[in-house]
Length: 346
Length: 251
Image 1: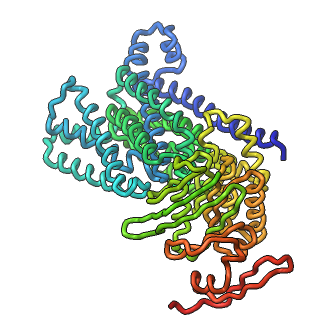
Image 2: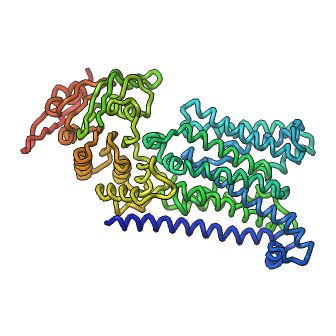
Image 3: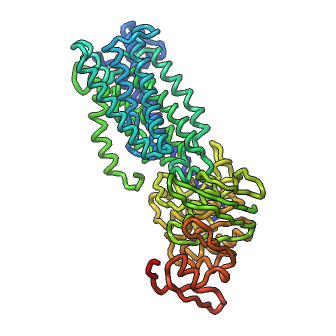
């Protein structure tokens, strides 16, 4: 075979991946429009479009679209994107398909942080509405640091890190249960609702914060994209290729902490997106991180956007907490994904 | 690249993996490292590659700074990442890769894929390959880095006899053509005798002897190091043939 054939093979692989990303982006646009149109008052797609482009004559539609629906729809996208991306990074650096911030205690840590504010009313140097997100963010970071710190005890082997994550998951769940046990009925209700996960408190300011964190992570990931790909071949082989594995893991954990923390802080615990989106991406584009990370981000956004629509439509007249929807849809979907997978990826 | 190892020791906790090993290898030379399981062969290669903490000095052309151009192929071939053969081999050039892969990187990968007859597998995922095919891919990865020093840890352990010969012929040819310094861990004494310029024999973490195969491999060495009674003969081309007869009772 000639050099042209390898170049052609490489170009064909690239074209396929670009197509997967383009299809994901197009599906996100459709889902976004449907998400804005769906709700207690269904808005025709045309009316939504007019409002978005400033052509609506009905102030009520404008108010619904701009004050409620658009922030929720966009927050669903960026939270899904952040969870998908953090799940992908986690699965890569731990070389484990079951890794995600939900399964390895980071979300549980955030939940405990939130519950701490709700039950104990911990004084924070911020407005009250931001106290819960801030503590959730902090405890997501503490959980990440805990996983990394315990894992370091055994040269940060992936297996040790996963076990550390599982240990912390149980620890934070136990602490959370303790807080729920001592909480007043009102506080208990507030904790439970937070843990369900909800997009209903979305706002433009929250959207910008999550988006800023997401965007800030991109250049940091681009720098490490080949090193992360090398890590998929195992620690020893990556080291042999010149990768400083310990430092790469540390940098990645900081990004995971920021992405998960900011996502969970504002919307509560949302499971399965961070686990399922990377699996979809892996099946579609493989694990060259140049396409795997963007695909996980896009399909994470799409999944949560679709879940947002479902949360408003499964029970007529009610909005089911988004965390319940992602788990209810996520579990059978995840099982289906695993069963239909022909390649020996995991 | 001239490799000089002086007084190299590696310890894993309470276990002394290798102790005070001295060895040197030269450009254009294939040095085979042989010895029974657990004799410290892999630890020696890992220490030279800078992958494990060690005592002693490793010099590359007289310098103790680990150069980038080391092609290291570890023993493990179990990688089941969702990466294509092309991507896995590209990773051999990790230090040079940008977000967009340059034509010269693709050309280097193509050359080595062609050399190892892997072009038809270029777009296949590693998980779809046999163990032997994966071993070839990781050899290609090590070669794609255009190394000056090639460290191969049992590169032919999962290959059939035809591919064993082909791969070792490629390793020997590239070592000569590119003036590589090649250390290769082997279990097959006949392959070592046939393809290595010199053989380093290890036992219990120590270097027992080092020299040309004909000078090093004899019935007494095979008995004392491997615990195997063997006969030695020559083929019509005069190449050494080791025939193991039976395991000797432990002393």
